[in-house]
Image (cartoon, rainbow over all chains, first blue to last red; front, side):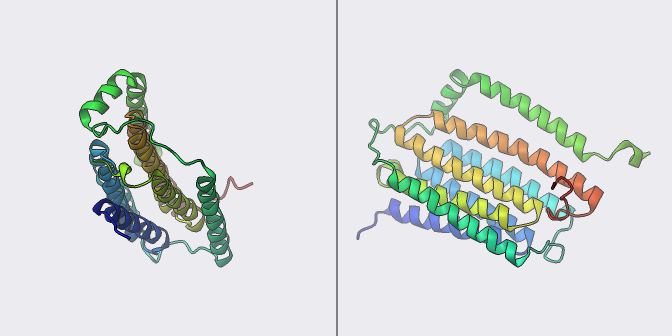
Length: 172
Length: 105
């Protein structure tokens, strides 16, 4: 069996994604979980580059690895969570979770197995992932959702500040 | 040259399904609310990956715009969720979801 470079890259990236994703769940220390999740996100960004979605790969690294995970890390360090403060999961609960999780996988894989074989819809256009194409679509067809997401961000920002600040009784 | 011409889309969907299943497993397995949020992020990423694979397969930029919106919503969700968790920690001194069970029944 001859593997092309793309296939090798796909398998390596998939292995990194799955192994570091499993380590997120099974590492005891929350800080390690965050670091492994960052590795997972970088592997997914690699998948995006393989799929010719360069803009999304860049945004993914900036937003997820750059902003969201730093926020997680900051909160974990601020609350001083580590292995000793980590809540213990009961053994029966662990068994139940693993059984439920493992029954979920065959469901999805079985749904994929029974689906019809897909055919290429149209000749490939390799520059759909570029900023130019995405920007044109974003600011013509999806202009209203784009503006609505700015309102969402504003309300999320106000909500986060309001929730995060100390109540007035404490400060007085 | 995109990878979708070499790698069948079923492989991407299977990878996405495995990643989603691991996220769901993590939500059931862990008791720390912050790790639960991280597992939800993992599930969102699984969906994003399948959307990008579909987008490359159909040569349609619409799905990639959807992924962009999912990222925006995820960022807002994390900001508000972590603020709620900090407030909970300040009031109860824990992020253990077994302790935060007052709405259980």
